[in-house]
Each structure stands twice: as structure tokens, then as C-alpha cells.
Image (cartoon, rainbow over all chains, first blue to last red; front, side, top):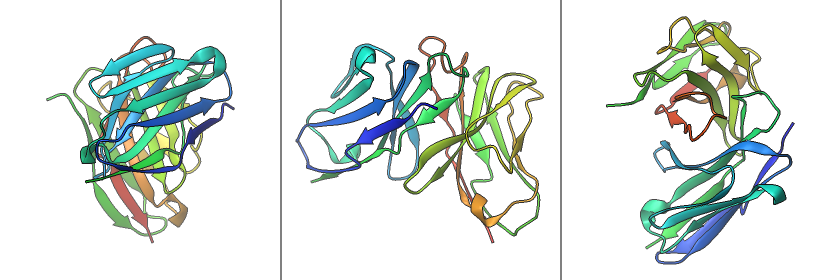
Length: 111
Length: 116
């Protein structure tokens, strides 16, 4: 099945710094989403982005489907950005509804 | 408030004692799914349902059952729990299938299950 790899696994930033999180996938996708899990365990969708670029405040995401990767950019990071970031994909031509998650990037933003 | 509600939030049980984790959504979503989260493994899909009476296995369905008799509810059943099912479980829903348009997942708060 499709493989999803996220990098880096861990990231420590000083407040105000920028960061880029990467998600590589091994096959074509028709669905890609980014999620943030806060330190209390709550999972929130950030972007639905199977291709192209989107921005929401300090966060933006770009998916280059032909090269099988997606990037999540966090600018001017804040302590509330801490947590784990997951990307999840659905394989194009695979079972609709079967969503595969990466292992996540754990981000710690220090004040 | 639009939400996905899971119960119980925390449960400690013993091997072999059947249990059910309930999941209910009030958004009239067609798609619902269950995931388990284990340290270092991310989230892995257990079962999903595209609509009432339609369920499919995810990547780790062994030891679990589900049913979708009505649109709002999608319970996860552990017929004979074992210690390797100790995990954090999440239910999620979306309007019309994960692969259709901009249908994003809404997650429940999670259920932490410990099997002794």
C-alpha cells in the first residue's frame, strides 16, 4: 500500500522562528490533509490540499502531487503551535475512505 | 455545536470483557471512521463507513467490529479485548467521503483504553 513519511520527526523552535514540515508519499493521491494534535490530544484539520497551495494566517501548505510531496509552512511560530503535525493521504485508485497517516512531526516552540 | 462525541473518554478493563466505545456525530455526515493512535506509529485506521449499512476494513481491523445502523452513530466493539488493544482511539466524520472534494475530517476528543 501507499507509504507516507514525514520529516523531521522532531523539531524544536524558538518563538518567532519559521519552519517547514515535509510529507512524502509513495503513490498518487486524491486526498491529502494536514492535522495538528495539540498537547491535550485534540486533532484539528489544518488543510485539505491534494494539490496546489493554500494559506490560513501564519500557516500555509503546498502539495506537488506530481513529485509526491507536501509541505506545511509555519511562520512566526508561537508556543500554541506546539504539538504533533500529521499528514494523511488517500491513495488514488485505492479504496475510497481508506486514509493513511504519517507518523507525525513533533513540534516544540519555546518562549 | 457541531461535534463528534465519543464515550467513554477513559476506560480500564480486563482481558476478554466485551466493551463498546460509542461515537456519535450531529453534522449529518455520511462518512465515519475509527483510528487508533500508538506511540511512534501515528494514527492507523481500524474501520470506516461511507454510509449507513456500509462498512469497510481499514489497516488494523483485527479484534474489532463496527456497525452503522443509523447515520449519526458508529460504535466500535471489542468482543474480547486483549492487552495489545491498549491504545488511544479516535472517531472522525466528514460530509461525503474523504476523497470527495474538500471534505475534511472532524475528530472526536479520543478514548483512552487500557486492557489489563
